[in-house]
Length: 177
Image (cartoon, rainbow, N blue to C red; front, side, top):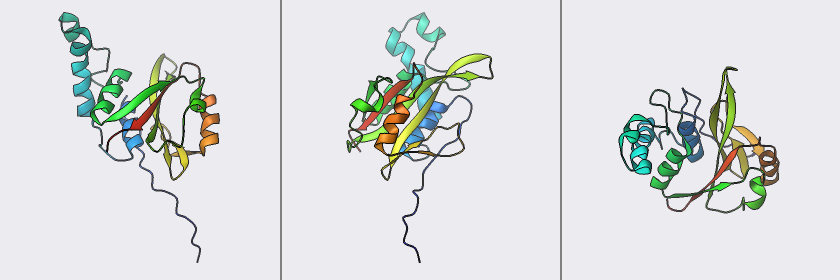
């Protein structure tokens, strides 16, 4: 009988509509419905009033999401993670993981946001999660069939160094449980 370690069970949501931020958050936290579309929509609806001090513009234009499909922006990400007691910081993609302590016990993982071409017609942005599970970093992109092993810390550094120009790297630290 072989006592080889079992591969970890990894939660992985698949892409629906433009809800990639929702999927990235749940994949990062490794549980279904830690975050919900309703919660992200509520935050996105309130942001124009908070950021633009009310006024007609706040009610007519909402650049923080698409009411039909999602497509949430970084302001929604920051606000929802704040409600969970997470600390976030933006990192320069060109520096990548080289300047980050990848063994920090408070490090949950990363959320990446990068430009994608949709149907060859228009350019949009896509959110993905990167998380360490049992000392292996995984790409938890909702547009791939399942979790993709990146490898250890050195492999993550290589992965981050190969990110396209303009990729936003957001480091997520858990500060409360």
